[in-house]
Image (cartoon, rainbow over all chains, first blue to last red):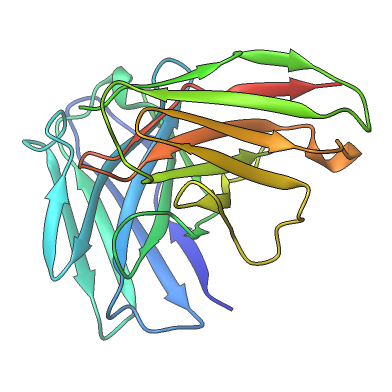
Length: 116
Length: 106
């Protein structure tokens, strides 16, 4: 059974960089698409991007987002720079499956609040 | 980006009712549509993918139909555990986009 476990701080100061990590257990991180999705009251569910060899980012966030993978640790990570209060949300990591279409496994979610 | 619009935004129903939730895409997405269920404090959970394929472990009272721009999720006989928020998601193009959600209440 694939499990995704998220880690990272729940509070980030404005203008700083949000960093989250997702550790995958129960399966290899190879051969799948691994994504980050966030959810806020104002914007609902919002796709951030994925990594699977290459990366793909939401154009609305592309200039600030980096998703990377560490296959030796079976982990992938999200960095979102220059955060503002509008980036306050619950962040989820998720597996998009071998074709990058649907999120069939999700992490538990991390509430990240941007505040000084 | 493809806009996904769900209706209704909220719905009151009773155990045993048949419920239909609609999702409309702003452009043709063929059959590239999924439905998710989310309960308070939990991550969304995949119910249906490719419009009508049931994810493993999902009860058969859930079904999906549609193609192109118009899709529906049907719950044939509501159970107490089905009261949740439901989202559609298109997988035709990037960025993937979601509907705004339909909250199903008792």
